[in-house]
Image 1 (cartoon, rainbow, N blue to C red):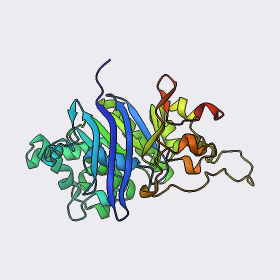
Image 2 (cartoon, helix red, strand yellow):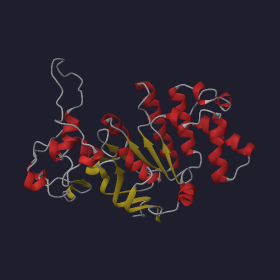
Image 3 (cartoon, rainbow, N blue to C red):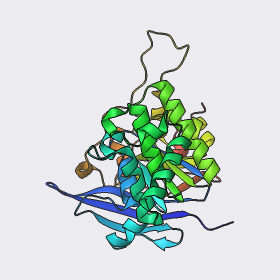
Image 4 (cartoon, rainbow, N blue to C red):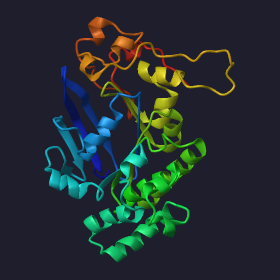
Length: 329
């Protein structure tokens, strides 16, 4: 078996806050091979976007990173910013959640698309513009030639998202990180964008990390899924295995809270008690313990549970998972 494209080992990120150091990511380990797709899910504040920023080397000032992030065998933790700039856009790229803030409002679409081509591939202005047009055509932006000289505010949300995808793919990166790429789009555009990303990833043989809070999107788009809570990967494995046979109480709670077609209209959806804690308030042990119906202080509170295997490739962090009834879905 080939070496992983991306290998993350014991990744820990600590942020400075007014209340002291806050652990944003804890003991996070996973690998991603070429052509593989990984979905990262969880409630807002669970650490999904922080993981993406850590991989891209775009963490807030003062953040302390420990552990290892290796891309194509190269260690990224501790790499000088100049070296990271050479990798961003060229070997790893990101589609941000809100395209209007990801695009520069005072530059044309053509100029913004040409920039990574000139920076990373050394193209002159004419060749970069021609390549930019090809990219817009590949992401099926209507009237692509006219859009080169348009400004971001002149495009719709779906069109801007296509431009952001084109920019991310400009230099054919090995890893594409898509952070909630369809949040602001209607259902029809959401499906079009997800199909477009899937098609481009497959045709180019790159790896994809898709960050989302939408379990339906994850189920239809990726091969593997990682469920995060409190900066910790609480459950991970093949998407069908995790979503149809969840074993962690948090994963079970997320799935139980989904609306279902055909359910009685007067039936209230189950909810997970409590709310996601602030980073500075995370417990020393299992981050989900304060909201978990199966929590036992002596077992769950002292330290973070170790990773245990449910089946081959299906792992979780829960000290009491064998006592929690399986939830087949």
